[in-house]
Amino acid sequence: AALDTLNELAAALGNDPNFATTMLNALGGKQPLDNTLTNLSGKDVAGLLAYLCLGETINRAADALQKSQNGADIPDKPRFVQNIGLKETLNPTKRVSIGNIGTGVFDGSTPCINIGDSDSGFIGSADGVLDIYCNGAKVGYINGNGLHMLTDIHFDNARMTTNGDIFSSVWGDNWLSIWITNQLNTRGTIDWINSELAIRDNNINTRATIDYVNQTFARKNTGSIQDWGWILDDSTGFIMQWGTLGNSNGTYNFPRAFPVGCFAVFVTNTNAQGTQVDNAFGYPVSNSQFFAATKSSAIANMVNNFPVAWFAIGR
Image (cartoon, rainbow, N blue to C red; front, side, top):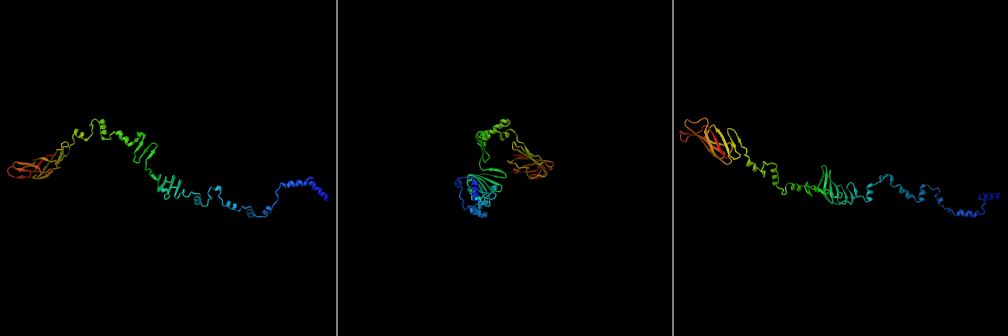
């Protein structure tokens, strides 16, 4: 039986007479067994992680940000911004700095955005007002009424100033105000305008002044045509005045005063007189008053008060 067994082993091994050598060569390509599998045998997950030194790795993985969240799972976003150095550059409650951190009016005390350098950009100075700054200087602002510029507005080589004047090649590479003056007259005086008016209307002399009109046309008379009235010859200044008195023998006011003086007062009876020849007479008292009365020829120094009409002339 033992021999049969050996025969069976030899047959199983292929009847290899060099079995020992073959086995040694085969085993030479294998790693010797150690106790690793023995140590892993029977351990739970925690034990396996501890043996493989993967505990800290697993803990960090559990607290890691997920790529698919795109930053939405950052627990403390303000501190994250601070930690990456953007606290002063990006703070919507104070300012936004694109480039250098803002200084001066862009220090964050007022909501602002500075762009490029530290003192150029926009400042929200009031409700609905956006100030525009360049190099620390306010150059304009925007509000509900539109854009307001405090300096010139440039359009390529043309520009408009804050007083409304315009500089452009259209105006001969000059200011519009100067161009208009040059078009009117090189001296910019009224003489040129007068000469142009004379060309357009030959009825007005070359000076086109009120003197020509006064010398050529008579002034219109004025007056008050009533029973107690006057008329003024505006060309000469002479004034004629007239009226009637129901009772004479007194001082009376002219309808209007004579600016220069009264030359004479003429008086005559109207509808009654005394039994004798009755002489009506009168004379100026001042530029605004005259005397009128009647006098009996029969009784010496008898002055009556019969009704009279009067006429005065003066300037």
